Image 1 (cartoon, rainbow, N blue to C red):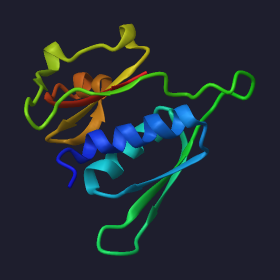
Image 2: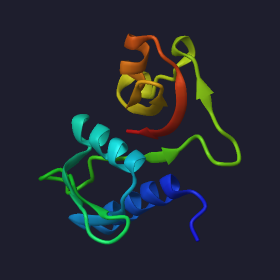
Image 3: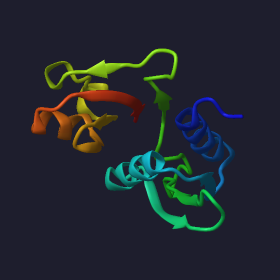
Length: 132
């Protein structure tokens, strides 16, 4: 039984990328779908597809690599807020990742978005993960 499905999601992406896989399939949830949408918008993955079969469904993610160096687009992806210790941030104290080069994915009352979008909309929320 998985106690932290978001950490499992991030670990599957991290492991697939370090192994050089082109595709990774992950059990779906609404929060995972939103995180995947943000990753696509910010250019960390090529594309994704939701597969609606079974009780839960799944998400197929096509990982993105550099053509020359064969390195993955995601250098680091780390879980910040955990079930045992939730991390919340106000809009004024929202973290900047690598001086704005990376993104923090935040779950707010207006949906899942990046730290920059949350600052722009002046909303705080739970800091789910850092990606750079």
